[in-house]
Image 1: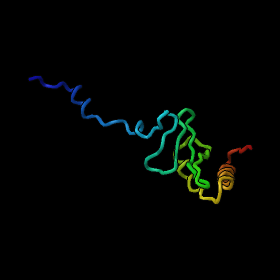
Image 2: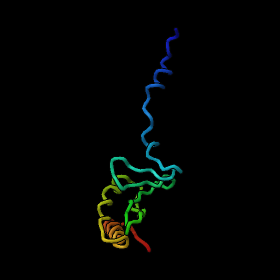
Image 3: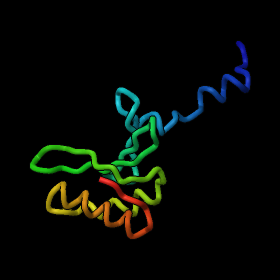
Image 4: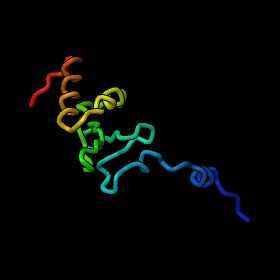
Length: 102
């Protein structure tokens, strides 16, 4: 009978990485389990909101790479339609001093 080493015991008891569990199949999008409708585009680090308009799902950029700022901007997307939500985000960005183009 062999006694397992400390390395073997630690490897069997380790928890799986929770960030990897919330990645899309292609590995480019990461969802936040604690904040519904918030997605992060992994290659750039930008945060997006998942918005449903006329039954179709869209991703709208929140214009930030900071998680806490993205959480604060997410409620701004409670708008009638996609264009109103985009205008709201642009207005929020202008009010905090971010130069918005297009």
